[in-house]
Each structure stands twice: as structure tokens, then as C-alpha cells.
Image 1 (tube, rainbow over the protein chains, first blue to last red):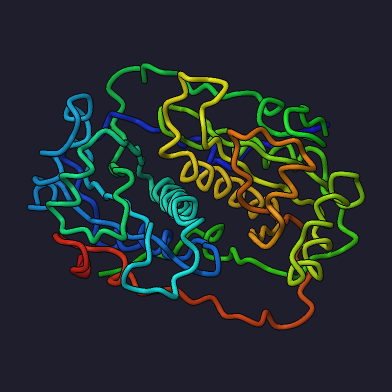
Image 2: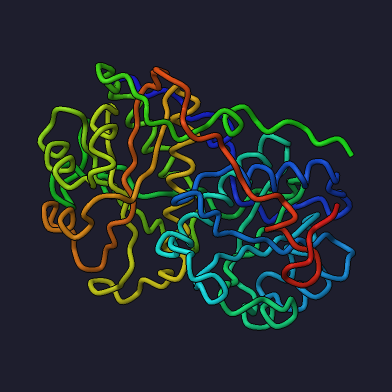
Length: 187
Length: 187
């Protein structure tokens, strides 16, 4: 069985911590990243995602940097932009909203599409969870129906040293099953 | 401001219901789709995803088709394969598991990476939620810690008629914000 290569946009992606701290994100490229998220699929086309946009040097960025966990303060601010992702967890102001069961999942998809587009634009994305979610909700006046989820650092990869962690994953047979759950998939 | 084109793998993706019912999915291509999911990022590399794999004509496929909602019985079985996605919602057998807050989100990312790879292989993916989740859990002996999430139909798009629904999305300013939540992002 010949297994073809992964597409280079997936194969070469990695969550780097090494960004060019002088790189400025072009407006058009940033809009295009949001376009990629925009056109991702979602349950019943519910599009349950939102993003807070901050760029290195602006006020929103200063606020976000102040909420970072200690481990993230060294590298996140060197990225050109940081987005905060949110999904719609509740339906307080719109009782017809019917797809919240898949809202976190669909947000993940939207961010993955954004990541692929970033890769295609020569940029790198590193998502992170280490920041004060409640403080971000407060600083950015996030309504209760929306769940602050991940931070998304976007920038130009600037290799300075070997990335410390090799990319490792479980084998396919450990997560893909034939017949009952737990029976390794064999093609 | 010049906004570049979306990458064709994202631009041309759509959730079709029109599959070639005679197309057989190549083993290597199927493995490669799972590879794409495998290498997607996740919180702390938790990889909280699993997939039940069924191909048109096998026993797992027969079982899955029996759980489809009425609206999905006409088109899902014409796809070459159906995967059921699951995320790890709980930690019953592994109390060290620490990333369930992002498990649904990370599963969504993995499925998005799989979708991009399918697109690169000339295939189409259509996710669906209309099936009996509890029945699938029972038929496939899914442990309580795992949440049956979406169905993923994969096949060769065979256009027979105009797709009935044009792709529509909210404008960027409706989901991307500068400063406080709700203030449209303007680059």
C-alpha cells in the first residue's frame, strides 16, 4: 500500500515559538486569514466563532500581553499578531440558536482553516491556552454567551535554534478504529 | 488594501451531497487522510480524537447507515467512506488527562486538517450531525469517556445538478473585533 505524502501545507506546519519580532503583518494578509476562518464549515452553517484581533504595538495587544501566563510572555509578544478565539456557548440573546453542541468543534475547524491559510502565506501559527481567560473576557467586554477559548499567535517564523520538541503523535491504530472502539483500523 | 486569494484548497471546498456511488476509496489515500488528522495540533499535544472508520459495503458502514436521520439516508451512503469522529470528554481511565477543556475544539481541528487533505486528493468531505449518536455509541462499544460527535462523509464529488445552497457567511466585521467584543475589526 502506497501512502502518498501529506500536502506540504499540513506536513510543514509546526507550532513554533520563534518569531521575527520586527515582522509586521500586512493588512490584506490578515483579512485573508479571517476569510479562511469565515469560509470554514459549521453545523447548519451556524458560524459560532468570533475573534478578538490584536497586533503587536496596538492597545488590544498590550492588554492581551498583560494576561499571558508566565511561560508565554517570552514568545507570544514576538509574534506579529495575536487573536483570541471565542465560540458561542449559549443562546441568551438569540433563542433560535440551535447548534451550540458543535460550537467548540466548529471554532476549532475555523482556526485550522486560518492556520492552513497562514501556512500558505508563509506565516506560522501557534495556539496557546495559557492566559487569563476571565480577565480577557472582562477587558474586552465579552458577553456571557461567548466562551473565550484559545490564543492564536501569528507571525513570521525566524529559526534561531533547533526547536526543542520534535513533533510526536500517537499511531493511527491508536485512534482510528474498525468495527468496535479500540480495534485498530487496518486498511 | 489588496486582499490575496484564499488558497484553492480552502476556496474550492464545499460540503457536497453529490457523490459518485461507485467510487472506491484507495487504502493509501484513506491512511493519508488519517495522517492529516494525526498531525494536527492540540492542547499540550493531548490528541483527544478518535475515528470509527467505515467504507461503503463493509459491516461498520451497514451499521452506521442504520443510524442516519431520514434527511441523510439519501446521500451519505453514496459517499465512499464514512468516519465517525469522537473526542475524549472525560478522564475516567486516565486521571492524568488534563486537556478536556479543548477536546471538542481540537477534534474540530483534526477533522479540518483531514478535510484539507481530502481536498488535495481530489475528494470531498461533508460533515453531518444527523444520526443517532447514542445508538452509534452502543453499536461500536464506545467508552463513556468518549463523546460521539460528527459523521464525516468522504467521496468523489459527482456533480449532477446545481448545488441547492449557495455558500453564504457572515461578514468579517460581524465576527472579528478590534478592542471590545462587537466592535467590527477594521484593518
